[in-house]
Structures are given as C-alpha cells and as structure tokens.
Length: 103
Image (cartoon, rainbow, N blue to C red; front, side):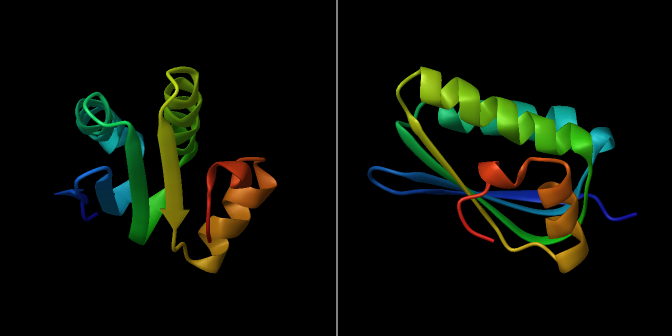
C-alpha cells in the first residue's frame, strides 16, 4: 500500500497543506504532527485533500479535532477535499461531511 505525501505552500497570510495518498491510522501520527507544526505559526490554514487513495475514521477524527482546536484559538482552518465518490459518501454517512468546505 502506498504511503502518503504532504506538501506545504507558505503564502503571506495563508499556509496551504496538500495531503494525498493513504490517510490512515498507520500514517496518522506523522500527518498530525506535521499539520500541527504548520498551523502553530499560521492564523489561516487551508488543507487540500487530493488524490486520496484511502481515508479512515482515525484521520477524519484528526481533521475534525484540528478544526475545533483551531477555531477555539481564533484561527481559520479550511479543508477542501476532492474525494472519490465512495470516500465522500463515507464522510457524509459518518457525519463528518461538515468538516469539508468543498467536495
């Protein structure tokens, strides 16, 4: 199974995090730590989910937790997902569609 990739684009007022590949429990700690390090120094962050091969509930919960934490800190976090239909339906049926800004 292919792993994941994270790319970071730093713009003046916004940091963009591009995630792709397998966003699963086996990769979740690495992904979480990297995202935390980026959002710690940014008031506005956008996470892009593209070319996702698999996403599991652990990663969905991490994205949800990050969004709640960021909002409490008065920062902005936008998650834009280009998910395959089956993964989008999984997000929708599990009640996590609301963490996505666009799908």
